[in-house]
Amino acid sequence: MRYVICVTGYIIEVSQAERGAFRERSAAIFGNRYMADVVAVVADLAAHSPDGVTVRMVNKQTQIPDGLIKQVMKRLVGARLLRELPRNGPRAPLHHTIEDTDGVWTVLVDICRNL
Figure 1 (cartoon, rainbow, N blue to C red):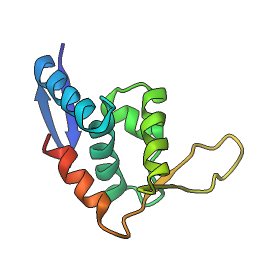
Figure 2 (figure 1 turned 45 degrees about the vertical axis):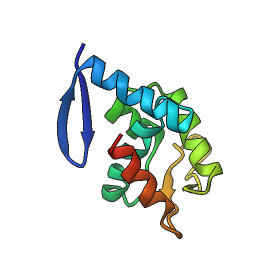
Figure 3 (figure 1 turned 180 degrees about the vertical axis):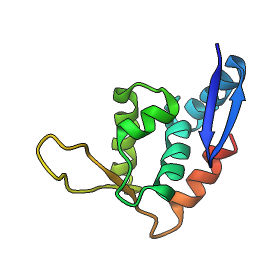
């Protein structure tokens, strides 16, 4: 199986073993196998998406199921690292923007990218 990381505009192919080790480190540090993937991709997408980042956008980059991404995004909103933007309609996708008033988001992204 082939895993691809699309972060910062570069495509990096990693083996299944490397992907598994990355996710195990994410689980050990954050209590969630997908936290590091989601944080790194949200940071990259937010840099190029002034309207915010959606769960579907993260899914397209990571192939992680939407439900698992939503769990991570909710934790990040609860920690005040992401903010939910108002929806344009009742069925419109929920967009998120980065909240980095104290620099914690930047540190988190650096950690996630270097696992």
